Length: 370
Length: 72
Image (tube, rainbow over all chains, first blue to last red; front, side):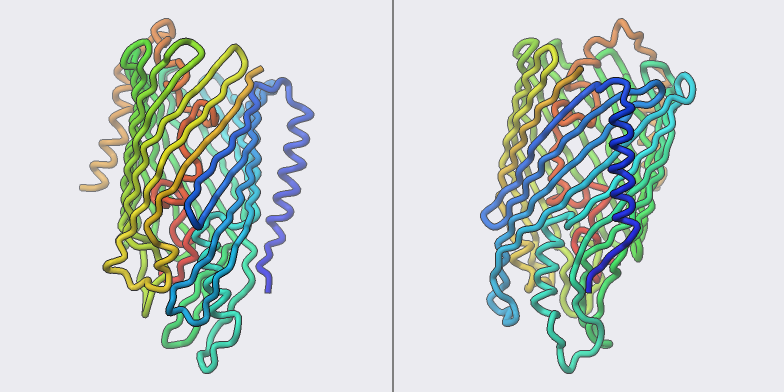
């Protein structure tokens, strides 16, 4: 059985048509960018290529982005999973997003956005879908209940908001409201009533406020506060503060700290610090370090759980940015370690998914301004 | 208490912004590449795919990303 949602294909067609219309009506293209990103470990590889263009008409400034993500996973069940078998999983995700800003009057803008995607959105959902397929494709006599359904993840989103520049050239505040509908690969669980299947479609409503300010002639800040509510879950709150400081003519320090929480017990915290050095007007180098920790996914399981246990991850990387009159290029590479605490979790069947990994992260991006 | 802290945290940049006014001719340093907040892949150095590994750093994730039935 396939999960389908007719609105998603209509939304895709609408967005492609709208994009084509906007492109042909574009007064001038301001920017064209392409980027490539890789996260790789021994058994999982994720690559993403994206194109971004920004253009301006009389009252509108629009950005259009197209991204394609490829997943390559060596699926390995645990030794005591007698229904499981090794296999190679290759999946793809394609997404299209359009965001526009219209000037209503001086210092006030209307923000509109829409997007759609087709395909799995994470390596975890691909791994878990394969696990459920191998376990529950055949009837589990005498266990009653639901059965496995073929997963066909896709979704769309829409955003509306406003931006108010309360201090011209120095500070603004922004409010956005978003709605997202996702056809997901559902989870499965056996309880007293038999095999239970999770929701096939999840709806998420979110609100975000942010404010960006030039605090001094050397410091720029951005603060974001978010709240989102997804089908069957409590509200998730998130906050992030970013501060960019020009330490001197040649040194820039960027600091980003943030966190998220969701009842009953999910909490995440992270910090990223970056130092950039301008060797000359064309060339900059930078190093950054990140730390992330969370308490594991919110869960209330019966026998065993596929929810991820506590996680700590660290990253230290180095990059280079090259700029000339119209072209900019950037490369970045970093080792990235993720460590799960499996000691208290009853997630033995998923220990090959939630195992410690040492990833390599690489980015290449090129941009041209017109 | 938690909400009060968040509210204070939120209002801090606004208060700073309201109390100071840096004229355009003094914004040379804060307008450099690397000092602005941008969605551009060449200016913004964040790793897009990091949210795959760190689900709490993005607004999405959680049950949807993990395919988790037990998540509430």
